[in-house]
Image (tube, rainbow, N blue to C red; front, side, top):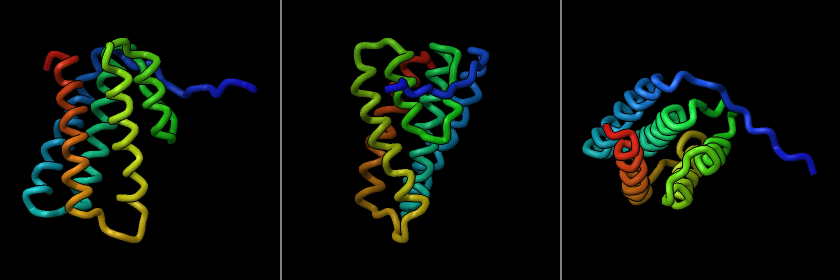
Length: 136
């Protein structure tokens, strides 16, 4: 079996701030949407916050970012490129959040309050961990 090639781009490490700024904006918007009971917006902003947070971490520590349309590649990059004892558990949180993206954007139903509150908890954990690792 031929190993799957992970598509990635080399990024200047200082550019992590761009991704972190995006993550912060999505994070703040997620919480604003919660205050307005906009559950679909909570979910999608949470997903995008996590994608950008992961991007910031990958750029800062490895100088890379996924260039694949498959967001699970970003999980693989995190697991293989960032060396912290807790990276396996954080990768699982990332995977759980990313699994909701298709449901939120494309399924013919709304993201529920219960689902939104659940994703907020996961996003909070991941985003705060990234901020801690970036010393922000």
